[in-house]
Length: 134
Image (cartoon, rainbow, N blue to C red; front, side):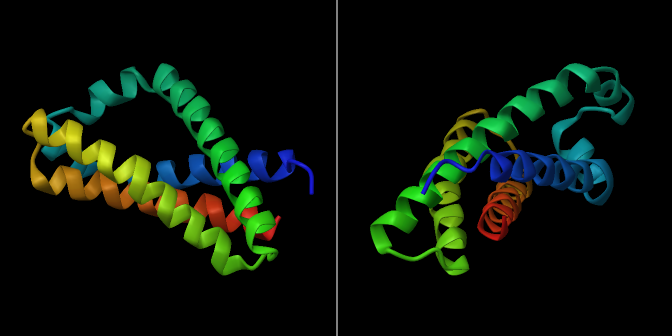
């Protein structure tokens, strides 16, 4: 089993789509209220931020692809449930805990922590599902 770069690219695209829907459409007003960042100010920085998001999603896709391939080899299965389990495990052990630590010490509102953690869960599951289906 070789490293699947197509899965990385596809998962990165899905990650960008999840971010666009989550923060660009579904929860824009709530996020703006909780962070105090006006939508106009956010749009001014969007080109740089989108590039950083692309890099971050690409690295997440590489990590998830590697984790899924390692888990598949260890278990001897490429079942879809395993890819989703790796996605949840990666989210819980890396993303959710890191967000909780930083946001708690920065005195961020609990609703913002939940909003961002839920986004990360959807992101990790969407990317893992994509990797499992490619």
